[in-house]
Image 1 (cartoon, one colour):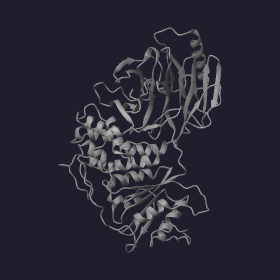
Image 2: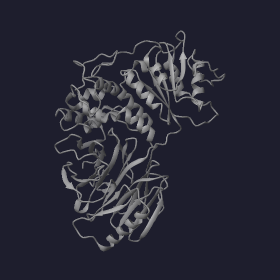
Image 3: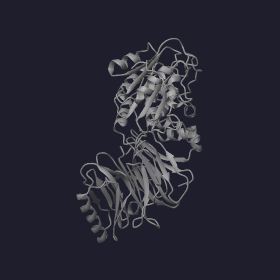
Image 4: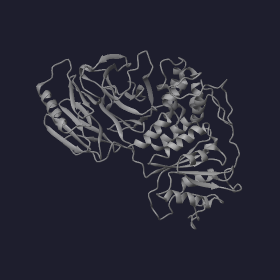
Length: 561
């Protein structure tokens, strides 16, 4: 495609920059053509108006009086960016979590998120990126993902347009000729000085994408004044680097997507503090804790891959907080099916749960009598008995639930005294109790998590692939309004009674964790950076968040538990 398309005669007061009307019409034609390539490259000389054209395109919408579903348009400047910083920015804007470029492509291809139409990703200044070749490769891979379209701006004569056109079918908009009035000229931005990359306070206050580029490349991006003594070897998470800045760089790489979001330095300090490994410079922790005083959480402890004192418990797939005989114990399941017992106070090891469940454990539910119920990856129920004998009626109840799930597999599991709660793939929640079976059609699509609270008024909390978190008291109609709703599937949920009332923790597939008070009060949120696999709330009101490489415990500042 070229820019020879005839522009619309009526822009409705939303005209593009003078001199780029033809190219603007070409972009709109590309967007509305279902047969057009998913990737459009905008080229031109310096000052030809490329960046201004994409800025106009990001804001352009249907004319007044013509309501129409508009695909989301996400503008991401690439000037000075590393491929990792761009990956984290794009992932955050599109509602997925990605630690690497490959993770981003996979997440967008497989995400269950519910975008409002096909997203259009607008990437400016590819030629001015810190890692243009790596970003060009990422763009080529993203162009193969069906849920997005891309518009990429690159200066004429730079390698990217030729590379992209050689690898796949590409639409081209070429702003030829002299610079346009009001166009994006070649004037350089004011230099931004790099912070001391070993100073946690300076790093938290600086531009996070600038910090990411410096940590990745080991040197200042072009045009930026640097403070580094020398370049580090380019590295990615998990690879060696010449200087880890006392552990600060490793923590940044672990939590990077969360750190690169727009937020106050105190909140960034909390995320960075929660990502520090036990081998970090001991001066970093108190400095970050002091800066994080303005955040709504207090970090109790954190355990990461590679930690030794106490050891990291392994990747987390399921979490449980136990009461009764197991009071003060966390149950942590991994992808191999093992369930470890940790002391809630400091995550130190407390043994393993003795079970013979084949395959992966997808949900666990500690019962008040010390019994632990497990759900395997086929949706079948298993019982691990505690040290005290179970009442015969509880044995009969779990046997009946097990027989039911053998015919109709479950997708989520919870237990309280005298009740077992199960979610299914059709969106229904089933409460099996001593007084009978109660059911509620709570969700559109699969139920991904359930939890039950044995309070003065017992209730069930459920989360679904539809992104909603709902409350229900068995025997009554579900509450019509969800406790929470977001355009991303719920991946984990846990609720419990605390001395300050019931608390509900929910995690979504886009990496956000929220702590809610069903009886009223402000909600609190936290993003650790990596994808969240499981959450739990302890009896003292602490929030535990599990990922593939971390286990973090936070206490709300308003509750000094």
